[in-house]
Image (cartoon, rainbow, N blue to C red; front, top):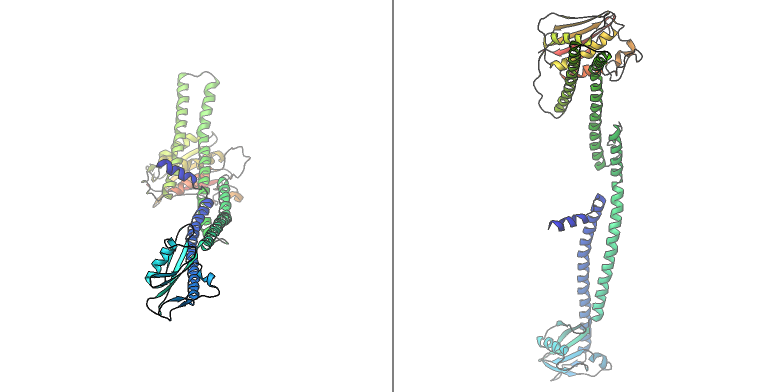
Length: 463
C-alpha cells in the first residue's frame, strides 16, 4: 500500500504549473466525458427516431394497398408492389397474409413481426442478429379483425453513423484535451512568471540586505499581497543582518582591549626570565582579562537575547541592581591612564545603586571613560549623583573636545572624528554605550556647550 502511494506521488508533478495543468486536464477530461456520453446517447436516440419515422412512412405507404372495405382484408396489387413487399408483413388479425419473399415462417424476423401484430397497436422492436433489424407495426383499425402492417429496416447504416460520430467525438476530445493541457501550461507559466521574477529578486535582495522593495502599487491584488509579504520578510532579514553585523562589530570592538592586555603581558613575560611572583602576577592579569572577555560576550549576547525576547513579546526578567562607585573605581584601574593624566571618581553618596547589572554598567561607561583618558590633557573626572528617579554619571576630560562638525555623527556606528589620530578604533564604542543604555530605559548624551574638553552624561534608572 505504501509502495503504491509512493509510486503515485512520483507521478504527481512537482511544479505548481504542472499540478495546475494536471488539474485542468482532469477537469476537462471529466467534462468532455460527460458531454461525449450525453451527445452520443442523444444521437443514438435521434437516429432511432429517424429509423422509426422511416418505418412509419413505409407502413403508411403499404396501408394504401390494403383494402378493408369488403368482408375480408385484401391486398391490392400496385405498380410498385415489389418495392412495397420488401421487408413488409401484412396481417389480418393474427393471420399472416403476406411476408417478404426472403423470409420463412420460423425466421426470427417473422416471429418478431408475429409478436408485434398480436399487440394490435403501434409498437417497435429490434432484432439483433448478424445485422440489427428494426421492426415497427402499424394497425389499420377500420374493421374486425384488425389489419396490421409490420415493416422492417436494417439498422446497420444507422449504427455505422453512430459509431462514426463516437469515433469523431473521441478524436475531438483527444485534440481538445491536448490543446487544453498545452494552453493551460502556457497560461499558468505566463501567470506565474511575475512570481518567479519576484522570488529571484527576493533571493538576491535578501542575500545582500538591499533596500529595494516590491511595493503594492501597479500590481494585481494577489501579487500585491505577495509583494507585501515578501517586503515584510525582507525587512526582517535586513534587520537580522544588521543586528548580526552590529553584534559582530561590537564584540570585536569590546574584546580588543582585554586581548591587547593579554598580548602585552605575554610579550612582557617572554622578554626575559621572570621570577615566580612576576609569573603569577602575569597569570592573574591574563586570567582577569580572559574573565573580562567572557563578561563582555555574556553581556552583549544577553542584550541580543533580550531584544529578541522583546520582539517575541515575551516578558523580560526583573532588572538587577548595581552599586555604581565600586564599578567606576574598577574601570579606572583597568583603563590605566598615563602618568600625565589624573583620573578621579566623585560622588555625593556612599551607596549609589542603578537598576542594571554590573557587567552592563561597565559596558556602558567603559567606552566613555576610555575616550576621556585617551584624549584628556591632564585630568579625567567621573562623577555620580542621584536624581529623583535616576542616577547620573558624568565623564569629563580637559582634552580638545569633539569638533563641532562631528557632533551630529558622534553616535553613528563606524564614524570617527579623526582617523589619523593614531587610534585604531572602529567607531563603535559610543553607539554601543547609547544602545545599551537605551535598552534599559537610560540614555547617553554629549554636552556640546561644555568647554574646555568634553562631557558625556549617562542616565540610568535608579536601583
